[in-house]
Amino acid sequence: MARWPSDDILSVDDAVSALYAPGPIREGLLVLDTGRGRERTLEDLVATAQKIATAVESVIDGKAEAVKLALTVLLAEGHLLIEDVPGVGKTMLAKALARSIDGSVRRIQFTPDLLPSDVTGVSAYNQERREFEFKPGPIFANIVVGDEINRASPKTQSALLECMEERHVTVDGTTYQLEAPFMVIGTQNPVEMEGTYPLPEAQRDRFTARLSIGYPTAAAELEMLDTHGSSSPLDQLEPVATALDVRELIKAARGVHVSGQVKEYIIALASATRTAPELRLGASPRSALHLLRTSRARAALDRRDYVIPDDIQALAVPVLAHRLLPTAEAMIERKLPEQVVTRLVAELPLPRP
Image (cartoon, rainbow, N blue to C red; front, side):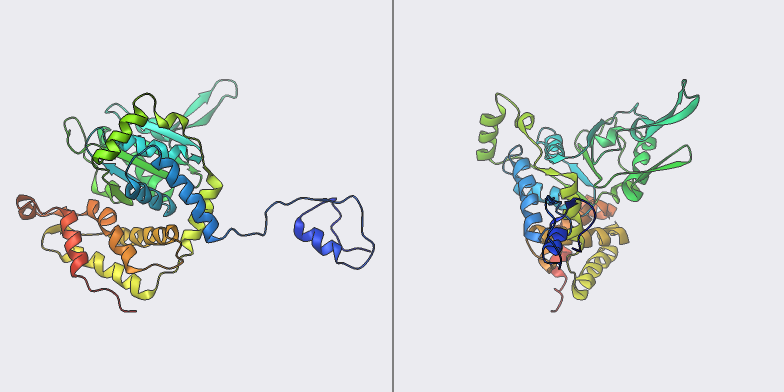
């Protein structure tokens, strides 16, 4: 008797085993290549990430580093805060990243009258079934774009805290899990502060990184006039990756090696912010964890399976600066947290190999 499964549909591995097994060869077998048991290499996964980056860059001109940071936060299973002046493409970047992935995407326009149930969902009474049923809110998506997040009341902002950290929602005593990947991209305008509610420190600490896009170069702005003048490239943007591809990328980033010396370097940098004279609030332990995760993701995007100190230095400002609070003296002297982090990175000795 030949040693093959009883089903007529075999995977490639089962079919090969059946061919070389002793006994007669059974005719009429259908071989189905399901792809199971075949792991994608880091090169394959990075190629997928490059497709996502290229798709986003086709909409956001001349901001390759900003796109890379956004993709790094996604692979680090984090959340991104985009903070900049009006009209530089904050919402456009968030939408482009969301549309590049064939997953569920929701956009929430935060306003002062927005309620927490408008974000998380609500239990509504079903007249036919004579029972309450849960109606999921826009937070139940792979990528959630929160536009002008600081315009909502603190009560509504707090509805995001559980979602961003625990990745589940609790409504009427029932907990609902959020599907992976899950990423919140919040945008806010730091110039026009009238009628806004500054994000509390607990919520700012849950954002893995803060990104400032900045004004484009003259060449990039000229190209933007040519490409965006008649139509929006966002309308022609098609998904180039699936949610499964992103989950595999996240899994690959988790496996990137971080040596003990690099981990000590991360702890030393976080500790230095807690003793800096210009700061009254230093980096939290969560920030050190976020710095570790983003450094792994950055190394994976650079086709490396190990983290180097350059990864930590490149991510120190976007990951740490938005969590730090300067002293009154530092504010008078206009010493920004970004400048403090840059100084600490320059002064801190590199880890020894």
